[in-house]
Length: 477
Picture (cartoon, rainbow, N blue to C red):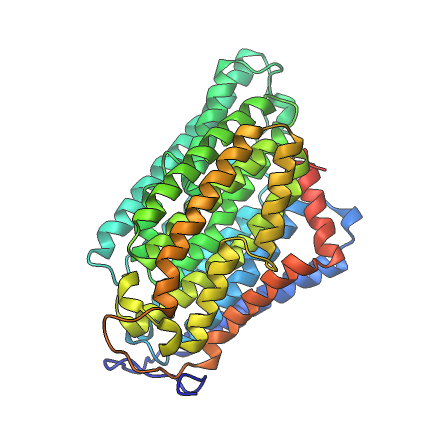
């Protein structure tokens, strides 16, 4: 087969990098982090969690354990992809020094933020991940990548400012009630007024609005499509499949803190934001002409499903967590594969890529698998997760959320297929010869596919137990 896996094809402008060893170092560090957290997960009995350290500022509990495993596994795949592309990409070979350094700093902040047991500390680490990501976004191949990077920083700063303002409102509420608020997450509920007053609810609304922006939820979602499209492939994957999860952790921490304190108010905000996000995603997916932008709007759709699932809680909670974990692997798979398509076709336009599976059989096939997983086909984890969320929504009697989800997901399903399937199997506007693909570039993507299938068919008992514990911590069962 002319498109079989073989030695990679280099960019015409390729110049060997004197810092190519940094790619190997990045993979080794990422692998070391995975080995560390998997070892801790295997050797730490679930019953011994949570474990506090650093004077209580950090905690290893079910929530942090789950997301540490996910983000480090995804980062390992992204690192292997970057290492394999150093030998074929002139841009990556030239910038590997800064990318590797910023990526490692980004992951240090991600790991510490996920472990944080203090709301202010968690907020600071979310901001730090943003500061590390901005220069990475600026290295993209868009027409004006620096403008996109500044826009991303502006939106992120605004979102985090809203979150911080919400924290101040919570402190004001506690002061008015003569309470002393402690920002340690496992003690914070003791400083909350019951029932909540206007300041407390304003603080909740601002925090959810700010964190919702980081998740790509409407109404503050507009930074996401342009940033994901303009950023380098590895950076898009970092933002969508890794950084996304620290914002999810922050939302889960809020649900854990406010369980029993204005939780209905929190649920209503999440429901509204989730429904709006699905509506926005459905409209924009129909209009998308770029496959990277289409994936970006699919990320907005995924955020909407997560918000609706969290608003339902109870029976839907396990499904939401399974959906979050599955989507981390789906997003990484799609963006890394889209990067390979971009490298060959030199465009993000869907209509220019007709017959991609004939030019790039392996990458085209993996992109197809990723699209099927994104759309919720069996046997992938997203299918089981969506069924659990919909079932939990019906059990909760929230027929509005059920109707919105079913309707908007159907529209997104049809619109995505209409754009993507001709790109994969259709006829191309330009002739592109079949390309030999590097098996190392394909390796992390295959790993993501295996993870998605396992999540859909058989979730190992320790992982399932971890998901159950996190679901119970936010009121699920």
